[in-house]
Image (cartoon, rainbow, N blue to C red; front, side):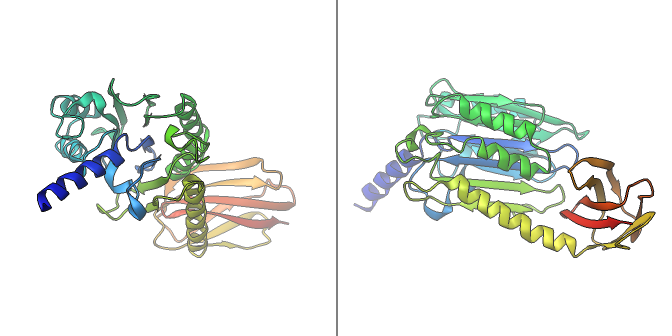
Length: 335
């Protein structure tokens, strides 16, 4: 009887997780070395754990894989893809391997039911991407790649989900995490996963995951997970709330590591920088939002950093500073 019960439970779990994760994005940032993944699904049966540990995995400094649609638990195809990446295979080579070595009994070891998105860095730090959507994955289905990202979905309401996610990712400035969160907002409408149309939400569970290049495995810079929600509650809204809270805490932490002086200032503005900050870039913005001075990322090897503001008119200005630890915005007055 125990054997029969275990077998039936396995069938129920597989049925609940079929077509999981319905829309996701995997991406790398060639400037910072960050690697991230975000996704959502109208799957049931995952509880508070959600799908984050089922459909995505990242090797810090190297790349990441999203494996979705009729997945097994554990997701052996994902595990094999990561093993291939660790062995040096490119995204396209990993896809080729998965198509000839499907290891998941769900849907009969048939890769035509699967969907993959992969992004990584080659040996020179250049981004590479690849994707796959099997002919038997549930419609609407598509995968789409850019130079540093792959967005994919199945059992979608329509193509708009992919269009919006791609456009939001490409058109959003800021960190990789900012761009991934924006991509998720592109799918924030009723029925993005068509199974959730009746509940008026995009999905039931969502996540956002980002690794810095020097993060240890299983110790990401950012891990936000919204577990399975009740009908009518939008997971992407909850994910955005978590992200906003994360940014607020991070900005307060970064602000304590950078001191701006003198304030008011006349000809020179100085930044006193904590030793934990290894690199920074900045934008000087006037009160109307116009960027007046921009300085790209550079290594910091001294405690004090000076900015020439002699050419500015008297008034209120903002200095937006991006560092290896996060971003902050400082206000100052030019006399």
